[in-house]
Length: 334
Picture 1 (cartoon, rainbow, N blue to C red):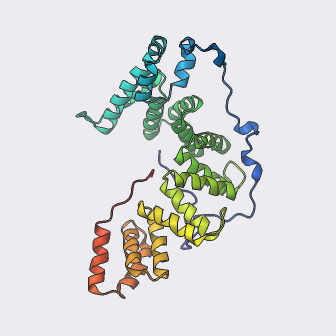
Picture 2 (picture 1 turned 60 degrees about the horizontal axis):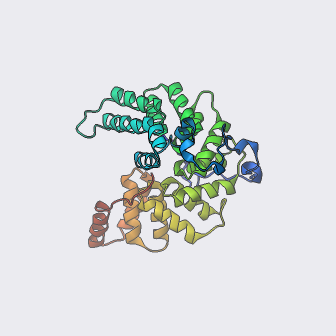
Picture 3 (picture 1 turned 135 degrees about the vertical axis):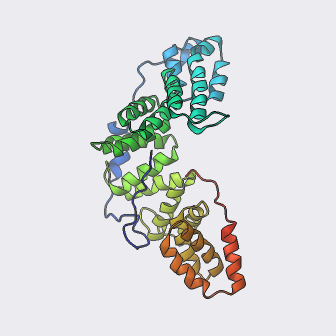
């Protein structure tokens, strides 16, 4: 599913990617709100029973629906009953593996989206939320959005964070839009630590999309996503600190987060960080980041870079171009 980065720049202003609002509401995310309450379990298991081998298979498979193969294998060793109950999910992992092979052409297999979808659906039929999400992604890519949303909904209700996040994103692109439902599922995924959901939830709070505008709440979720390695969130955290929006203004923190985003390949962050370095007299370092931003399509960075290059010696110009040529982005969560 194509991800849209909000808010986007509409002109040349440095911080137009963050809309300025005058008021926020503290009441949006009260844990007592019925809107945010987690669905109650349909069947309760008493811990005093002690013997978890008697756990009903339907409860066991719901609990384990989002397990990866190593976790399923470990759970299957708990007792014979669990080994039997988790057999369909272990089979689902095989179909999931083959689905990925067909989708990406791995393991000597030629890419075949039809076979990939067939494999994912077989895994989904055996209860794996991981397979549900992968099948939904393929449905979305081929334009079968209703089928994709149906699978996302099933995975989301089983507690899969990726399913919850993708369902929220799908609702933001659905016709008609379902903004409130989108925010609800993004919040659920965010609570589980899903960094993309945290970023998208922050955008909704920032824009007042499906929820009242809450700048402090948006900044908190941006920060959580940034700390989890999400590059776009790092950039927005840098802007929040720079202008004092949702976070106390701090040049030091703004520079730290902007550099983190720049070092992970965010082109706008590279431009902003290059400008910051230039303003502080760090011309050589500034040119490296501005050159990287220029190569990534930030045309405004080229003008500033060329102005600085005219002030450098031929040796220094060759050096910074060599640094840019050999630059590699640090790992990130996208």
